[in-house]
Image (cartoon, rainbow, N blue to C red; front, side):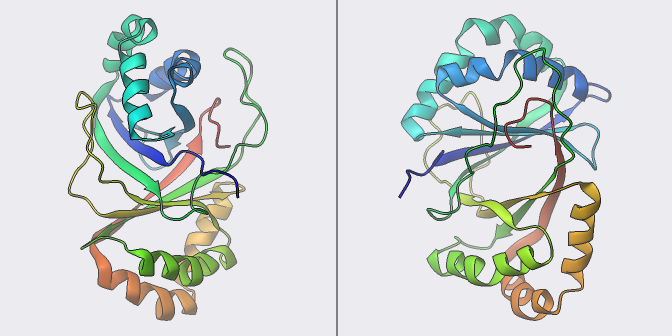
Length: 245
């Protein structure tokens, strides 16, 4: 069995000042990808939110919590962040909406990307893919029985309606040992990410799911019993240098 890729994952949602998203993305894709990976992080993906022009979403992974601390100390204490932090921070209203996650099973981690990302400054190949991130908020922890329910009941319905998850994760409650970057604590979440060929097919999946008898009768009742509030759905499109495309 191959080792699990990125056992620790951050899902980061930034609220930006109006008109500043492309400014941040240009800076991020140019300056903050290799510099973070050189420090020990894995940049899993960067995205525009299709429904909110002022939201930037990205995913960062680590081998474990100790290496997360080391990577963050190295990057945020290093020359690249010092040189560009004022420009980056000027685009942001809020950068504290962060969930700390771990793959829910050995099969739940993010796959290794196919193909290399473009180098800084290179034209990005057109990527029509769209991504759907679904965040379920639980009343209590999502235990092994729920993970089995997801794998045996939820995932097949998502696949048959056209949007099979490529990764599924749950809350990681390890201590945040880099408090300069807050994470949302006291949350119980289960998150899945799925890829569609394009935005139209993603929207078709959502319509088919809404009308699926199996979803309504076999899946939704169990999910609804566990949720603390309505789930969040993020319709996303990757930036030019996102590893997920």
